[in-house]
Image (cartoon, rainbow, N blue to C red; front, side, top):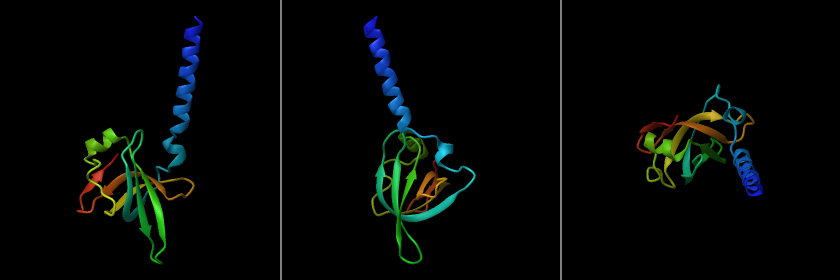
Length: 123
């Protein structure tokens, strides 16, 4: 009986660690707003639970801001036609997504326009 209780405690601690790492979409992002950015891909992390694309966005004054584009799961990206070999470091892309509520350069990616002009709907 003690072994079962220990197993349950370990399982609960493991689940709580995972739930803390995952965030609520509506708490972080504002689904009533959208933002469009264009820039150069610096990183594409094709990982679970959400893949991330980082791009350098240059404003009219030449200042560069690194934007992070949070996507959905790798499985959903594959179904949308966005596989790891589609994006390369140095590619110029544009993206539309929901901005964060606190103004950080981070968005929940909805649509991406690839270097060849093809658009992919992520959601």
